[in-house]
Image: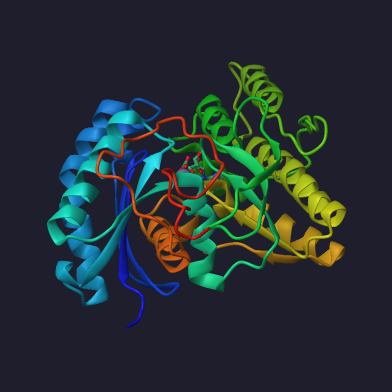
Length: 347
Ligand code: KG4
Ligand code: ZN
């Protein structure tokens, strides 16, 4: 008997995602986004996001199943993001996942959202080498971690952001530049026609492998303000901002690989979709003799497939399923991929 089809459900922010994975292979996926409903507020409104998940969950699961040519009864395990994220949004995903898992009588696993981002790459490039260095860059988190066995071992933090996340920096500066929400993709697009050397934005390099983006954010916002009354050269500002972010992220990530003697760097999370981050990571990894793995952009931003990928790893590692009273943890620290006592069986 092969391993079961794992249904993954993601609802931590403004994307409702469902994915189906078996034995490391992506069978089907679907994502619905409430992004447009938040755009006029300039950021995600938690209540609107939670309500949108209620409406999107069933159709998204249905679309993922249809795409895979499967029926709900083919699902053999369910994995769901239980943190970190917006409380109301997480609650909707967990309620839906419990309903499906208990209705089918199959095991349920609670998964850390950022471990999902890490696992996303396995769907494109196969199992992660042990060890690898992973740069996780999303809207709310920026961490450089050493990963061994994602299903069994704790993730070792080499560095974290001391203040803003890289994605937050893009989102907030985009606003100051008059670009639409979400800021990251808008900066990426605007930067295409710009000169990355036009503005000398700071390159914050705090100690060891930590990051800091609030100084850069403030410098970029000031630069925009200094043009009051004059036309803002947005393309140059966007290209220069993107260059500064890509520079500090890739400099530290590659240095960590070299110092720890690790041969593979994996870059994941929404900001890993950034064209300059991808290109500069490629250049620097080549120069340092490090193998680079970055998921395709659609698997970098939030999705359900990445949560199914973690569930599939947990199932195959023999992890214990979640207790029936499992709850969400909106500020879950990144320690293990599984967010409930789940390793007992594997030990
Ligand atoms: O991982 P993600 O989808 O959600 C979180 O877990 O936060 O990441 C969203 C973040 C946002 O800050 C968004 O602006 C950023 O990823 N992002 C980008 C790009 N696409 C998404 N940042 C820079 N360039 C992009 N192309
Ligand atoms: Zn995310």
